[in-house]
Amino acid sequence: MPPHVPDIGTRSGRLYVSLNRLKSRGIMKNSQKKKIPLYPTRLKKGDTIGIIAPASPFNRTVFDRGVAVLKSMGFEIFVPEGLFHKKGYLAGSDIHRAELVNRLFNDSSIDAIFCARGGFGSIRVLSHLNYESIRTHPKMCVGFSDVSALLSALHSRCKLVTFHGPVVTFLGEASPKTIDHLYTVLTTKEMLILHPENGVTIRSGLAKARVIGGNLTSLCHLTGTPFQPDYKGHILVFEDRGEKGYRIDRMLTQMKLAGCFDHIAGLVLGSFIDCGAIKDIFRIVDNIFDNDSIPILAGFDIGHGQHNLTIPLGVSATLDTDSQSLVYSEPWTL
Image (cartoon, rainbow, N blue to C red; front, side, top):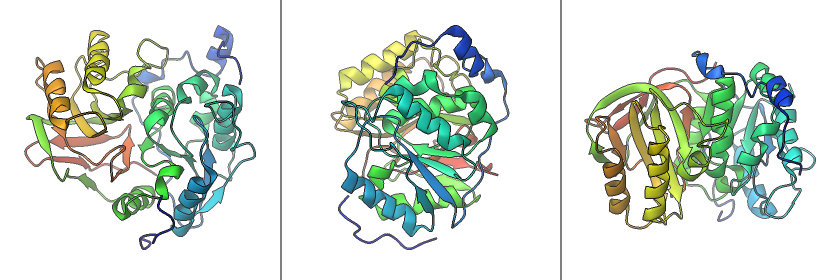
């Protein structure tokens, strides 16, 4: 494992798509029925990471700091032409951002994909992705926050194992713990054990199931769309930032009424930064799931907090509130 990176710095097109086009790109197919995960290849030093920008534009200086972190791990970095485009609050048109995703997945010289930044916009590219091509060229895709919409769609449409972890602009000021953990997940197949430093058991229990989830706001906005994932039988992970308690309540209530939480296996809560008193968030969650006998464990360093630990999405793990742990005992890469 490489040493910690020292002080690198203190941190469009139309939305309408025809039915035939959706079918040709694999969007209308019910790939949820395919139970076997599509595993990407594990990274090694010298491999090339390509960068995409599916959401908002970003600060070039902050971006360069993050790239330096990835290079310090021994990876080559590919920055595609057009990555720095801007169109208002988006990093270029919807078609432009989607084509960057399609191009890098289809490019055999790219071994893994990192997202430059979250913000907003990932949901707008989902109808423009070539899921059939992505399915035949599986590779790691890493991001979080708004990128949760993209990660969710890649899993639900392709069964691709994705990775909820730092975007490039987060890495420049990321903690050593965040960087070391990211490198471990990218390059090894060892058992992954996560213990929340200040874990809170909201509901006791034990569950083993595939883990999916990410940013609550982004996933809530997929509800009622063709990209709403099937949460049944899964362990869900939620995190968020800057959403007041009543908004957290509203989103969870909407998802509950939509049936999203029917027969889920368990719930993991990451960081909820600038969302008010964390005890109030826990109380809201306890109330929403008051009739569900599932394990709920909070306090994980997943999301927008000081530490943002990378986790695989789409593979099985065991959630145990007695040991306050989330354990990945099965491989997440080839």
